[in-house]
Amino acid sequence: MRITVLINYDAPALLALAYLQTALSDHEVRVFYTQHNAKPTLPPMLADLGKFDAQLTQQAAAVVSALKPEKLNDINGADFQRYQQSKPDLVISIRHMRILHEAAITVPRLGVINLHSGPLPAYQGVMASFWALSNQEEVLGTTLHYIENSAIDQGAIIARSQTPARYDQSYLWNVFNIYAAGCANIVSAVTQLSQGKPLAAQAQEAGGAYYSFPDQAALTAFQLPLFNTSDALTDFLPSASF
Image (cartoon, rainbow, N blue to C red; front, side):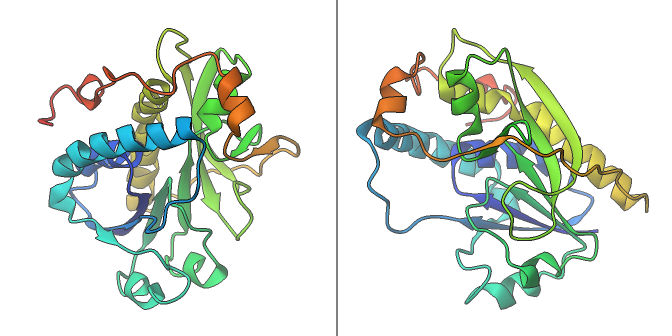
């Protein structure tokens, strides 16, 4: 199959791509990433997290360099033709920072699947693991679902994963920790589709909540460090050379 992967240029997304690269090696893969040129004004704690993430991103980029990720920020506009020319049978989205419009969604014949870093419909939006940890959830997780339209985190669910929350670790460590199981669900979906078998997906239940970036009050009330300087990608890919 021809597979186009849409990611954000951050450490968790590149970690997920590293989990997938061997499984996708039998396919024709094109990787596009989003990267903000102008950084929004963030609370200092989130800004510090971003700086630490950037250090790990440089390490993770080396692991997936063979996939030759390409910057593509405007998938619905100026960059649409380049995306379309990848001629994907399937699109996989992971932490991609653009809402796909109908034209982009209809390009792949097998659809667009997205790995959301939280259980749906309970935790829609951004930083789902942060909010789940804030709510003292015992289990974190991911949701693999179809992107059917421009509604955020609303498509039919293909698979879920569950990972125990670790309150002796940082927020970032917990984010890294959910992607092995989530990517295993992507691999299963790709295998099934490559064999000509449709995915069994179920419409989401009503309800849940949409979360945005935490403000200073939510960050101050958070019980865990956002990151520890000891957080390392080698803990999650021990065989990789970072």
